[in-house]
Amino acid sequence: MGIYSTILASTLGFIIIINELIRTKKTKPFDIMSGVNLMFFLSFVVTPFSIYLFNMEFSAWTKLVNVEKYFSIIAIFYVLLGYISILLGTKLSEKWSFVKKMPSEFNRDDKKLERFAHFIGCIGFFFLFIFIISVGGIEEFFNTNTLYRSGEVDPVPLAFTRNLAMFIPISCLIFYGLQKTSNKLINRYQLFFIIYFIAAILLYFNRASRMGLLVFIVGFVLLNVLYYRKSILRYMPIMLVVFLFLVFYGKRIFNYFVVDDFSLKTHGLEVSQIIGEFSFPFFTLTNAIENSFFNDMPRLFIDFVLGLVNLLPASIVPFSVPMNATQLNTESFLNMSGIPMDLISLGFYSFGISGIILISLIFGMLIGGIEKILSDKKNLVVMVFYIQFIFFFSLIVPYAGPTNLFKSDFSLFVSFIVFIFVFNNSSNKTLNNSSKGLKC
Image (cartoon, rainbow, N blue to C red):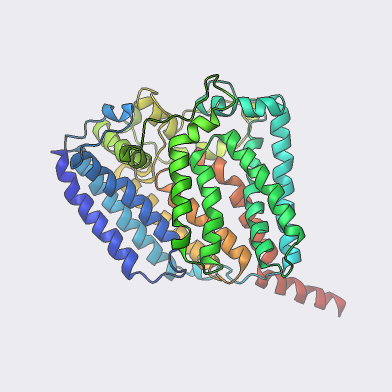
């Protein structure tokens, strides 16, 4: 019976394609919603078709989900509700007076931008240094990357500093833009770009995150496409090569300092491995509907509170923090693998259908708000943050667990707030007028 979910999946795919074709994009050739559309299409359209029509098999843990029953039909119906709610949220944000009052004009001063990039970059370096020292030095920094990710070693008390080092990739992208816009063939921005680039690569290696590394690299491509108006087709081959390389060899490379018998040998190219990277939201949601809520109760959005609590160092939290939705989801699959929590499943576990609609509406309104703030696509620093938010919103579709989301993107949130305060033209005008008034 589960095969009938492909009918709803076809409907969802049709709506996504039509939305992408007829929607007026504020940024050509794609915008934030384009990334969200792509993730929905891969996770909830391509995945069902690959299961029911092409009989593809994925990771061992997916076999715990009975996709032949009607639960998958309900799952795709819920996805349709969530996706339509997102579209409605983006439209509502355009009419919301609060969004209309958001700042959207930011000055562009290369010297000021350089200081800003150094400011956040040096903060990142400071916390990266603290983290390296806390784990026992540079050797342990390399040797324990995948062990920390898999939970085979206990986190050190200062493990939270690794998340604060994520200012470095943002700084790197800013210097990449500065060195490209400089009138000098050889300039100091190139040196700073290389320094921050190397540090960012080391950071992603320690995090053992293939998706994080892919996003970081593709970020430079998107800056060229969206800001410098280059054709994305010229970058497609290299992006495809990088993607396939990380899919098939990423885990092996991250394990280079951990395993004794390191090898890059692979068993060949399988399409199921590629689609499998985006299949877990479908299995998670189908499993959620079949087994209802964790402990038979909706979580009432407690995961957002836990996400904030988990930002704090464990050593200063005076109580044992309950398991979050991602951990419970992994446990529901017998801990066979770490299974992320997607956007629609998060809404369902939070408050059923109402939770899906509410979270999806807010998600759409946030997209509209960011589009309003970052509307000046001729400003380099605006485009740097816009690219960051393309990835941010796109990846929320499959990776929506608040704890992981807050930790991974805390540096982005802080950088963005500082950016608005420092570069906002209206704030600068107010400050200038105040200073003139004082002089009088």
